[in-house]
Image 1 (cartoon, rainbow, N blue to C red):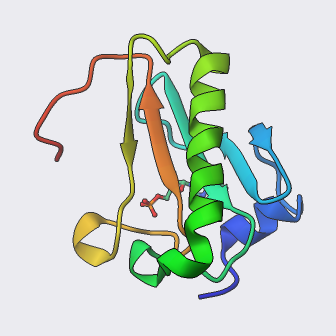
Image 2 (image 1 turned 135 degrees about the vertical axis):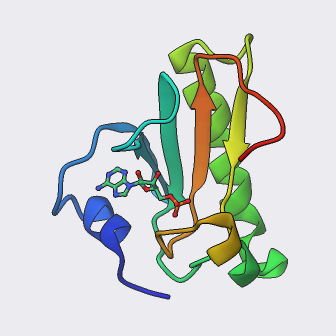
Amino acid sequence: MGETIFSKIIRKEIPAKIVFESETVLAFRDINPQAPEHILIIPKINDIARVTDIDGNRHSKLLGEMFDAVNTIAKELGIDKDGFRLVINNGENAGQDVEHLHIHMLGGRKMTWPPG
Ligand code: AMP
């Protein structure tokens, strides 16, 4: 837990294409997009590395704000009607690279199932 590349993005020490920002949540375009729209939604606090660090009592408001951000962004990008996919990779088997909780929001194309 703690410092990752996303901490630097939050502090604006490295550039990112920010699409949404509030007091608690930041969202920016993924540097290696897997769909025409690929946004990462992250909490600004850096003590949730993974889903398994989430404590419902402490984090429920923050998680609600992250999903509110998802819906705001979906409308702004015009993908709310056609649909989009949310992915949270958790740990090694899921291929999580950055140890700072993030929701991948993928849209702008038809998705396939099952995921890889
Ligand atoms: P994950 O594999 O679920 O941990 O996802 C990490 C994501 O962060 C990947 O999709 C990367 O492309 C993305 N990423 C890493 N560094 C940056 C960066 N500096 N700006 C935007 N996205 C990044």
